Image (cartoon, rainbow, N blue to C red; front, side, top):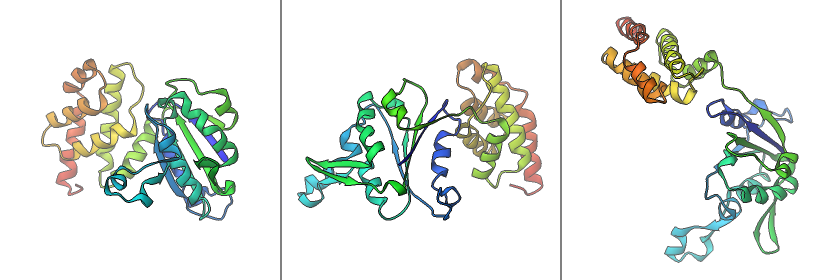
Length: 257
């Protein structure tokens, strides 16, 4: 089973990179197969029920005995691997308790997902790819690290963030996006930061496209680019908002939005 851990700060593209592994062009066999994507968001209450087999509360209440037991995320991925290529993403494992790592060890090595005493679902290891992401909130254990390839990622460049935002909001005029990106980075710099994430720039752009005044542009900067009260204060009087608003007005006059 191919397994990889992606380390890096929030917003650097770890989850996106992992999910893109499911695309046909990333098929390691070169056959161009699109993978079934199985995603799991780790959290402080992650446990064996969510990973291997749990209880469908609705089925239990309805008295549907056959449907009470439901596959956990690892079991579901194992079953799907017999139908074709599977990419399993375990996002932000560092948010889960350390005991969750112990539950993953045998699965990563053998592909076995226990579903009952003495019973397990065996994954097709040739069809399985596992991507684990971590924001480094806590160290991951040596036993897990030994089973996975490790990759360290850095924040995306301003140009990369701008390009991805353009893909997500394709109707946005390029001139508006470029000036907004510069304004957002100015707000970040006022807080001592050197970047804004795709998750921040994209909704910020969507708000600016609906702006009715320069005040709305400043509100969008304060709401998405700033992470502190100091940054918000800077954004609400930012001179960088003026060229953004000018580009919005110009684009509307040209019928570009």
